[in-house]
Amino acid sequence: MRILVVEDDDVLRHVMVRSLADAGHRVDLATNAREADHFWTVQPFDAVLLDLNLPQDHQQGSPLTNGLQVLRAARLRGDRTPVLVLTARDRTEERIAGLDAGADDYLGKPFDLAEVEARLRALVRRTQGTDDRSGVGSLVLDRRARRVTLRGTALELPAREFEVLWELMTPPGRVVSKRTLSEKLSDFEDTLGDNALEAFISRLRKKLTGSGASIRTLRGLGYMLESQPPEAP
Image (cartoon, rainbow, N blue to C red; front, side, top):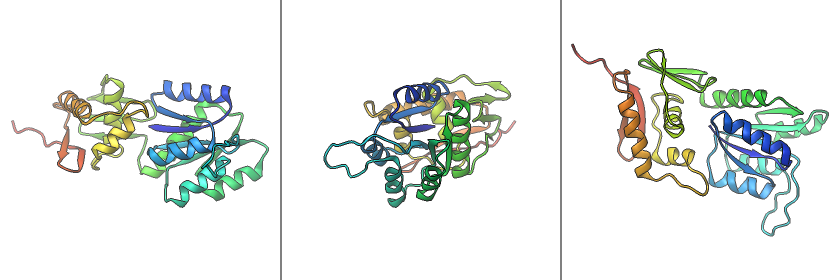
């Protein structure tokens, strides 16, 4: 998943970003309302981890001063990205305000990092209509374990090939545009070009040979992972 973390506390954001990155997620970080609104506007995310209490950014041109305003702005422009709000455990009014503004769930501080990831997975499953496991042919993706198996054996994939397959299997059978794949796999400083993406797709196709699953190219639309009929004897 590609996750936006919005948190101003140096120690907490460092721990969260490292934990999520170690779990295989791509993480972008914003430390104030202006950065959060900008990143969220220009880049699609699978989920947002949002602290409501952010420092004021006095740079001109930014009317947003806290996480609640960032969340409201996103919902007003029709963005339905799942949002997990971080609040002080004893601030009931914060939790209510966040949920009323469009948050999908909240987690009180202090929290366990494993619970953060579990809640994010649950929010994405709910939004995308997927389960922890999905399969095509003899290919199975286990999102909780972040593992792909082929005929019951772990399929070892480089990080970006794994992310491409994750997108194509969430859920299988849907068309995923080149732009979506590029955005999910790119950093703000490093954009993934069409040639690199096509190279990942080509390598994945070879590794899926005989799996009963194939990656289909739909010209002008993108890619789709679909079941492949068994070959005639």
